[in-house]
Length: 436
Image 1 (cartoon, rainbow, N blue to C red):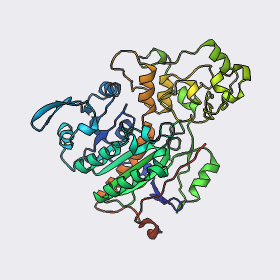
Image 2: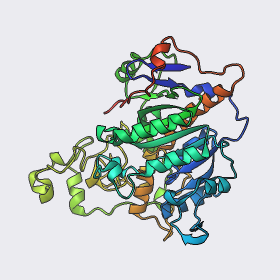
Image 3: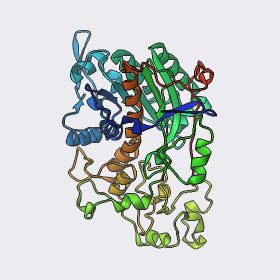
Image 4: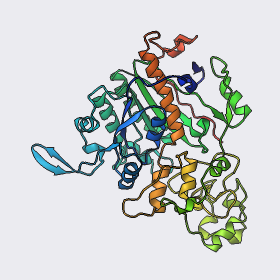
């Protein structure tokens, strides 16, 4: 069942339509910028299978190798160029040929179901320098995504990035991708999704651009969770039809932490920031939802007294009954955001960060240089990941549309009452949903 938001021109499909649907064939993935595997875990739960991964970070590759030895990692450190052997950095997408990827995956051009990935977000992040394409290190990696899609020719693709990429000064990036990918025969849609609306205990908004061959304006997964009745009613009033499924309430920090097994601190990937007694004392003044601004003046560090360079969530305490704020790479550090434990005077552990990202408990994060996880490595791997539950919802939505497209009895998705609005030549406008 397709639901069309008449205001934003975004279409949604309910994932429960997958009930009873079986995979008649392998649904292989070519995974780029794989990171610690969050996107791939979710897609795996939706019925897809990662055939080959490309990842630059050594620790992330160690994590992938440990958890999914069947996923083939592209780590070749040499290549032949102009008849000569040359060295390259394993996992550097700029230096990897499409033919090499396909050979390692065992796929031919056109056989992959998905190409997926989120190019490094720092060039477009509101926290970083916001250099976009001018970022010399990573600003052009979206071009590599387009190159791989062109060469692999998958049935569909998923591109993920931070919301900052939607800013006007980066509009040429989205326009370029849409134009090039449409020219390859893909129907294109893009929007911003909030992970909390798909059962993730975290208010994390991310940009997604998806494409499916032969499907005009592909649909995104219909939200399953809402903050409350008011938010739910605000969402459905813009739809072309009233849904019958209802909704569930957002998953909370308390829900997530309650599922963490006891003795998690004994895991090799457990790490937590050492907090001085002085800082712990400051935490005693911070109630849930409050931040450094409620501290007595005499307890404020000199660098905090002006407050000009600090965010509204700096040194804040998580609200137990709501999803967390976005889990960033330094979410273990209470000075970096609302990352004080809701009930204890301490920061978050890597295990708690992973739980708020909806990683399964069985997923173990690894460090290439030592058996014990470090805060920096664990924080980067977890904070940069796509929440698996959000990825699963996306995978389900795309899988339904691929299956429907191939169905002999129904070659197209169900038509909507307002065909004119769906036939617009432009992709759907951005929808930034449900900010707290």
